[in-house]
Length: 300
Ligand code: SF4
Figure (cartoon, rainbow, N blue to C red):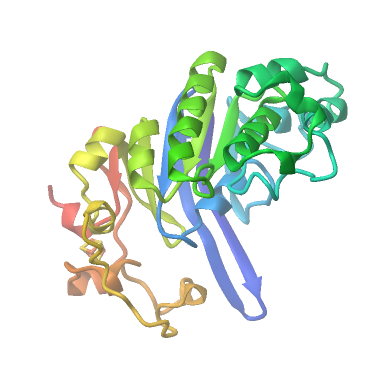
């Protein structure tokens, strides 16, 4: 359904450049859930926004069912939607739930289906006459999900959809997303820093570090046999990532420093060698559907 080729997003701040997303390529089959994990600020949300054309890439191409995505293509915009982290701030407090759910279909000249949307996400019909502040966090996220479904999309970017919710509510929302995926044949990019939830919901996982994919694999393979040291540390129960000072060499804004040629993870990697500091590893397939960017895997 989605093909991404060499996608990059570079921000320029005066004379400094920041590569938020670097040269990312991947395929996403219809009906699949791809989990995207990595530390805060690694580019996960930027990648999600690039896929939905909410921001424009610096270079690279995104194909949806074989056709390049262009902002002018209203139909593709309709078919690709987003569920946000904070349902409250993403809902207009002055609009009733009914108006919130109806607005996208009015803009796109489509029939309104407020009642069906409320049923789909498990909200009562009388919700349509009430305002967002009258609902709990979990119910607000159901409203956000209903709004994302209002244009009958095929692909949804779920950007940390459960991180603002109580733990007791998180599983309900994830199970709702799984049910909707099955009923409506949806495809998700599920962005989260909650590794256990990503394992539960996703068929494939991509691990992102400083704007790049460092490892991708089918979920159970990645969780059983993580190959990249960063993935191994993320998955280990004891946080062992060597903390680094915000020296110029390690600040995000130095990511594109021309002098930095080695592995981006080398300053924090327990296995870093001289080669790692001098030569950037290639992101390559080391087993069927298992790709990794690490010199340790080069000769296996
Ligand atoms: Fe660590 Fe070297 Fe692999 Fe980078 S290439 S993750 S520094 S072992």
